[in-house]
Structures are given as C-alpha cells and as structure tokens.
Length: 412
Image (cartoon, rainbow, N blue to C red; front, side):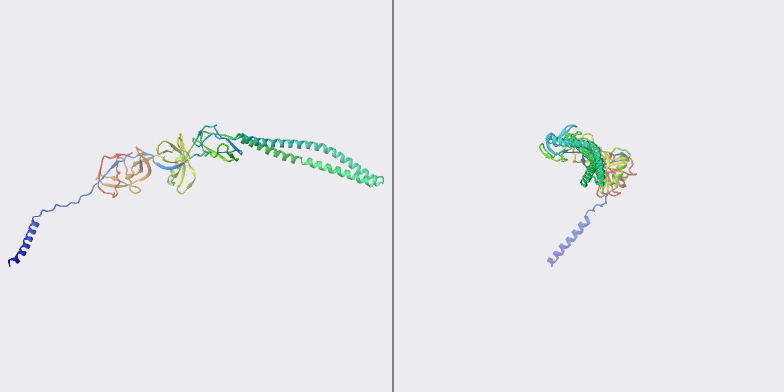
C-alpha cells in the first residue's frame, strides 16, 4: 500500500512546485511600438540663374579637306612630304617629272601652229581663186563667142561639123571650170570657219596643257596637315588620279546628333544670335554651335560645332565627347540626381521632420562647382531655403520620419 502512494506523492509535489513557480514569476515589461527614423542628408535650396548643359558625342571632320590629283599623266618626280606632316602655304607637296610634261606641251603647241598655217593657206587659196575666176570667166566668154561663130559658119556651110563640135567642147569646159572655181569660192567661208574652230579648240587645249603643266608642281594652298598619301616618288600615275589629301589646321568641325526635343530650343537660340559653346571633357578645346545639318533622322538632327582656337592633337575622324551649354534659365535650382524620384518628383523636409513629395520640372543637366553632373529643375514650391532631401531612400513616401545627418549644403 505504501509503495502505491509514492508515485502519487511525487506527482503532487511536482504540481505544487509548478504552481508555486508560476505564482512567484516576475511580470514581463510592456512592449511599446516605436517609429523608425531614417537618416538623410538635406540641401538648402537657393533658386537662381543656371546654365543647363547637354552632353554630346560627335565626330571631328575637316570640311575644307582638299584632294590633290594629278593634272597630267606621268611619273612622280618629287614628293617631299610625309603622312601627318604639317606644311605651310606655298610648300611643295608633289611634282610630276618634267620629262612627261614637256612632250605634252610641245604637242599642243604643234597643233596650234599647224592649224594657224592651214588658216593662212586657206586665205591665200581664196585670193588665188578670186583672181583665177576673173580669167576663167574671160575664157568662158571667148569660148562662147567662138561657139556662136562656128554655128554661124556651119549654118552657111562654111565650116565643118567637127569645128562646131570642137567649139561646143571648149565652151562646155570653160563653163565647168568657172562653176568649179565659183563653188570653191562659195565654200571658202565654211572651210575658214571650220579651220578657225579647230584652231580655237587647239588654242584652248594649249591653254589647258599649259595650266596643267604649271599645276604639275602642286603646292599647299593653305597651312595644313598632309594625310592620305597614295603615291611614292617614281610611281606612274594617270590624269586626275588622287595623290594625297590636305586639310587646314583651322576650321575643324564637330558633328554630333542632338535629340529632337532640343532642336527647337537650339534653333531659336541661333536665330536670336545667341552664342552657344561646348567644351571637351578635359576643357582643353572649345567649340561654337554654328548651324544644323541639312537633313534629319528619327533619332535627331546633327549639329555642327566649329572648333575655336588651335586644334592641337585633334585629328579628323576622332570621336569626342563634349558638353554643350544651352541658354541660361532663371528661377532654377541645381540638385544631385540622388534627390530625384521617378521622372519628376523630389522630397522636401517639413517642420515635423517628415518627407513631403513635391513635383518639379526637369530642365536638363548642369555642372556643379567641382564639375560633377547635377540635375537642373524648377518648381513653384522650391523656394529659397527649402530643405531638399538628397539621400535616395528605396521606401520613400510622404510622411516618412527622417533625421538630418548634418547641416544642409547650399545650392551649387
């Protein structure tokens, strides 16, 4: 019996200990919900006049590039320049061998001399034909009188028929001689005109040959840089064959495509006579917007920017990133890109240290004081001293509690 009570006693003691511990346990502290605060940086805005910029990427071209071609067929006698060499106006670029120039010039001169002799011969022939025609007409008149006399004698049976036929033949031959001579005189103006036309053509050919012979020594028409050399000394070339190219050291242009959204603004600025400039990323070179290209494309229209100052190491064909300064805009602020949410939203810090959304108008990009890229915007509610939150929060929304990390930065 005692053994049966032992398990019951153990269970009773255990239950008594459980209730005792439960009654003497400490009360847990009350849990209260706290709002999370996000640490952010703030910029104190100061609206003013800023210059929006437009990043462009263009190709450098030499619009006045000159292709030097052979004026005559022949052998290259001299080529003192090399690829990339800078030359001065009047420097020799390439020259044909004189041995190939003189024969062509002599041939053209000989053609002129031959045709001048033919013209003089035709004039002498015309004068001789005039004198001969007078004599031949006299002979014709005499032959006709002899024919009349022969016919009269034959009618009276005082002359034979053979004598009459002989007189007829003489008169016919005299008429034929006069007719041939007269035709030669009538054809004189046409023959002379043909010879004079050929002479004019030969003289023009001589002038061309002389001009080409003078240009066979090709010199630089301006200060420039030699490129595109295609021949060496001793090469045989044909007429009009390209030999080399030369581009001026001044007047290089940059062609870059501008999105269609900026076409109207830039075009209006040019019409108003405003000067829009662009600078390379390293600020070593500056360009001036001069005009738009004559054709457009769905992706935009090319603008042509003229290099100002020395080209330095720039060469045609180079791809250069530049930043074009647009017309200044008033009542705008420059903010970091981290402050923008979506396409047109920013957050301001209100008096309760909470985020408050504001809509802005994007003007474009701008350069900060230290050269970094910034966003240029305008809005009616971005007044002077407005605290702009520039820390980008992934869960940003109006009313979110924030804490300012440090003193606000001024507008740049």
